[in-house]
Image (tube, rainbow, N blue to C red; front, side, top):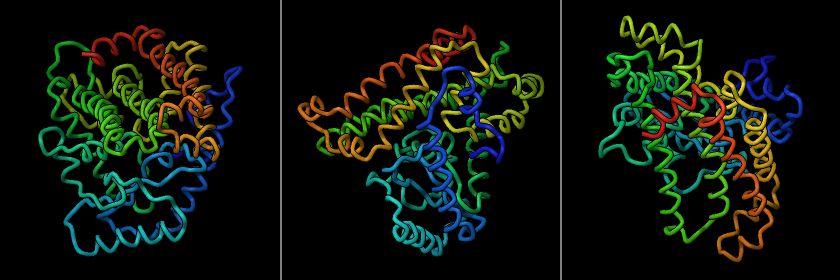
Length: 359
């Protein structure tokens, strides 16, 4: 997910434009590199070929702030054996010893997860919210630490499932080749996140309501927007032209699979930056998205403001919280910027968003 040394990220390329300066995003990326180096030092030699330690959340998005926790799974691609439980316990021990903040109590992370459910349970009664979350985030915001063989295999098989089960990709009469099975699952995930937010509001008695709401308005929405953009890149990106021809003329999925895997290597912010660089996007839209996301990152990186968000839960708390008011100030123009990106600025992207993203 990290750019090769000396290779500027898409965000860095966008930041070259006059008036663009996003210091908090840059600091978060540098802090992420330090966090990643720590993890690599602890786990570089500790994975077997059938397992990968996979990190999610801010570390994977390159958005580490002072209060970031560490969401992780031990991904197993193969037969489960008793030694895997020992690996899980060893991961827990190392992370706790080195003061990494443990995952939340939802049960989605902090455990070993087999590949079978991720690859084969896409939809249906057995595709639980936890499985959908792990699968979608494995695509959109994940980072392998140490041995990545299992990670690469599982992600490739998930992408193949989305493409090979999508008959519209090979049998459509027109020239548009949008992976709608993948698109619909990304959309389902976003809607599930929004519904689960309200469920947790009741089940957890508004615990950390303001912080979770802030993330829903900003980082969670960013992930979904990046997923939409990636799907539409399959039609808009000139780098995917050969993949589109192979689909239409030979019903060959291999090039599109490889292309999508390459795009999933970008962080969500870099995906949106790529859209801003490659499409007809106004400077106003760029500033609305990135200026406000930069300010959001700075809020989370401020220990006082983050603590204030963690504690705010009642209407009175929210009215009296300067940090919460600041979140509200940045979330509205950020949202408007994403709307402009997908529905206003570029006619080609607008057509795809209206035709495939809504119905």
